[in-house]
Length: 247
Image 1 (cartoon, rainbow, N blue to C red):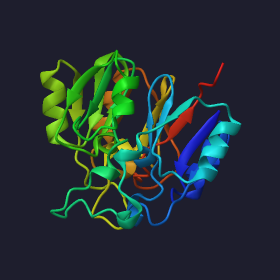
Image 2 (tube, rainbow, N blue to C red):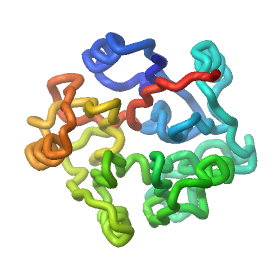
Image 3 (tube, rainbow, N blue to C red):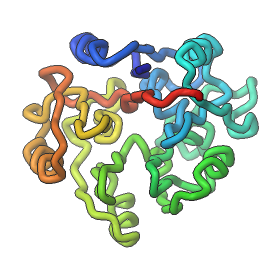
Image 4 (tube, rainbow, N blue to C red):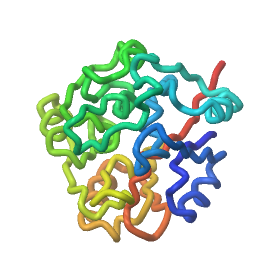
């Protein structure tokens, strides 16, 4: 199994993940602003069948993914900015930043949740069987983890309201207390990922103000909780577990 992570996540977390498979540490420069420059969920959308990869992901990472026979498609080149303006604006800027969020959709076998007017059309085409749920928060996957049986966990109130209206069941938790160097806080979706019946968390829930709420919610869904290091929750843009391969 190939596991794609941000190079900046804590060393202890990397070491624990390396016991599960081969680690691919993501690091880029001059494409997006530094805080998210190694976040897998900025460059890669993971669908149940394949990866949809941003055309501006450096070629050496594509080579590593090919080595593991992972199925993927390259996204639409028109989804990213031209080379004269590749440095994307800080999200608090009044300038739109669509190129940094084209692949930040939350997808499982039933749903695609994203700000759909910004979603790369290749993702929309690949997820033609999933119900589309539009949200205003364009950094959707950063803020959302879709779980089993139509459940979810989010740190965005707008996402929470939209998913509730669509009949899903989940909880909102505050992003306060989640680390994202360079920002006041990170987001809950970027700290964790599900693999089979376990949730792998970059950090310890005991260091998060709403950790007990999250723990109870996940345990009630019969998930095991694997804390990858004993420290604050760290938003590394998620963890991509690649356990599907080409035939």
